[in-house]
Image 1 (cartoon, rainbow, N blue to C red):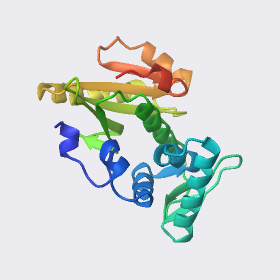
Image 2 (cartoon, one colour):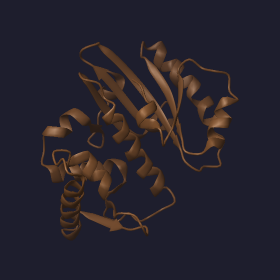
Image 3 (tube, rainbow, N blue to C red):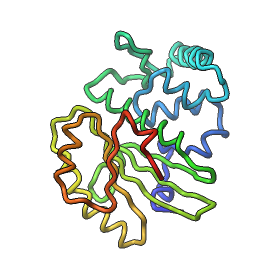
Length: 221
C-alpha cells in the first residue's frame, strides 16, 4: 500500500470502497465535503451511474439533493444558466468555487479512464512536505502491480506563474522518489497562456500537461 493510502482520512475519496458501501446519501455528503462544492450534474455522474438515461439520472440526483437541502445537511446556490451548486452548511459562493468544481470534473474524467483492475484514491488540497497540491491521486493496479502517485495542479484563469508552482515540486518529487515511490506531476490547464508558460520550461520526464477540455481523451495512466 502506498504513501497516500496509509494516510487515509475520512475526507479522502476512495473510489472502490465508497462505491458499494454506505448509503448513497452518505456517499453524496462525503463527496460534497471532500470537494467543497458540487453541481447537480456532477453528483449525478458520480453517484447515480446505475440510471442509464441521463435525464432520469439528473432528475433523481436533483430530488435527493433537494431532500438533503430541505433537511439542513446541505446549502445550495445558483449561477444563472447553471444547475444548483451544493455545499456543506455554512459555505457560500467564493472566488474559488469554480476551481473546486473543476476538481470534480477532473476526478470524473479520471474515473472514466480507470483501467480494469485499477483502484483510485483521491485527496483534495493535500499538504506534503510543505507543498499543498490541488489533488493527490494514488493509482494502484492489482493486475499490473503498479502503484503511482499523481500530484495534480489545476490552473483555470489564475494570473500566477505556474512555473513557480512547478519548481516547488522538485524537492517533493525528489524526496518521494528517494523513498522508492513512483510520482508524476500533472498540470491541467484551461487557458493557453498557462500552456505557453510550461512550454518554456526544460522538458521534464515526469511532468505531464493536459488541457481541461480534452482531459478525458488525452489522459493515460
